[in-house]
Image 1 (spheres, rainbow, N blue to C red):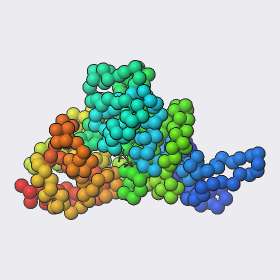
Image 2 (image 1 turned 120 degrees about the vertical axis):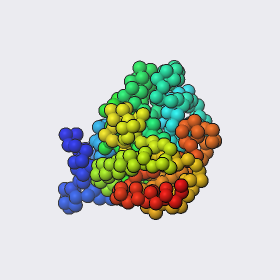
Image 3 (image 1 turned 90 degrees about the vertical axis):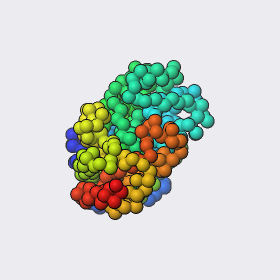
Image 4 (image 1 turned 135 degrees about the vertical axis):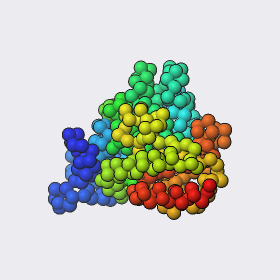
Length: 385
Ligand SMILES: *Cc1c(COP(=O)(O)O)cnc(C)c1O
């Protein structure tokens, strides 16, 4: 594991670059072997079968553990595989409290899958301390946080919620996909387990699907390891290597994309067509203070409202730089329309109470020139009004 004395900018390089003692090759090999020959009948080596452990996957798992200031990392086939595995540390009769702004896939898992195995749930506004305290039951085992939330970028105070969870003998799990360990370290803020869709910023190039878990406490780490091996949704070796390559540029991408997002958000606030900008990096944002207390920046995702679905339809056709698709966190800018994409399953009423209005567009800001991104939106706005 990369020594914790290094800064993240050094760690993303050192933890992903491992010179091979025999060949001198500086990158970890893509170790495409499902099985490992054992030295002799009585002495087994470190690896035996790749579901249980693989040298390439080990480098990735150590890298993310070190970046998150945890002790163990675990790599999965997708973010949802990581989240499923983490939540299966619960047993029948247990109860989870989740942020009401949780990722749609997590919502589906909890309300349509885990419920079949007797795992109960309550969704609350984690910013409302009384509501959170009232949601605890005798059987509550986990409080599940996601911050900033998708797509309205609401911020949850991780330290406060983790403390309240611990007062009730529950653990705090944090989906850190939007921030990555470069911008926010939930374990340092008191969380017990960190989750990632590695598909997004960590991989960073819209190429692979991946998921990660990081733990600090050894016994929680043992439970996750047991489930990773028992359920078997591990990340393939080639994708482990691609994720390692993505992590090498994570620090520089997060810094530049966050700076671009702040500049774009500041500009959007001044546009007559824009009725609202959601971005926790803006000093004018109601979320700014908490965000600044626990994260290095507002991140690279923002959303804004341009009044109506019709305006969004026109904008999507008029912009020339961002791609119109689901997903986020890549080198290229990506715009999406939550009411018809990530939140299509919700009724308009359910969407509206969550601030997902008909004119809302999500913008994941990439590495293009921010001047070009502004000019591109401007020419579109000019043709709409
Ligand atoms: C995409 C995403 C997930 C799910 O990850 P997959 O890799 O698509 O399975 C979970 N949480 C958040 C916040 C996400 O953006």
